[in-house]
Length: 327
Image (tube, rainbow, N blue to C red; front, side, top):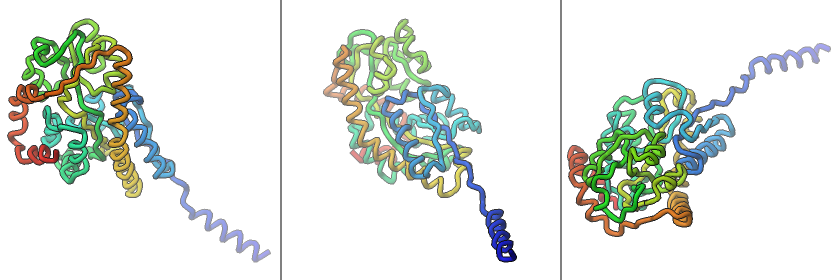
């Protein structure tokens, strides 16, 4: 009986000091585009890899299709200290509006001449400097990884064949000075329209044209109201996955390692899937009746945009040259 009581006491003591299993950490990930886009697939891959690496210790609540707001609204909330969103996929140049000068260089028209050129940048030490910039200037977020959603192209309600047809056209822009400058350089009229209102703006003639990567063009059904797709490839749709400091603080060191490892994996996978996914969508668009116009020689487009290019790279000329030289 005495031995039984001693054994029972040992078991009770051991049980009392055994730490309780902690609940999984859930991080909300915002994506403004549908899940069937390239960036939507990136979000799905990130979720799957984080949950696989952590064994479910970290869960990703992926909210896509803009249900949490526009990119600007979500980013404002993260930077303002809100905790609704922990992680977000953004256009890589979005942070230029918040003081990230390096990020601005990724939106300069006709910088990247090919996908291979971009991936040389994304896998270089230069890219690591760009990802670190938000923390360096005191923004409450940090970059996890880079990716891309294909080159961005113009699309129009009415028939076009080349640069000359842009003259006087109302082209939708976001509130971005580089895009606005580029559209003006090309002879068109920049028109600010919220992305969520773009379909109706094209339908009603508020704007004559807009620009997006091919996958986003199809997923948002813009071909229904603007069936002329002009493949000028003015910028590459470089993207980042970022995490807010408020989300980062929810994680321990091991969980943070899993998050960053998932970012590396997603960056590699994005490089594999992006070109093939875009080519498939382009064939679907052609089969569906979209008029696709190739721009074989971009020299006149590049020349037309020299004012915007020089005005926005002169203060970081050496850094910009390093990016260009990676081609």
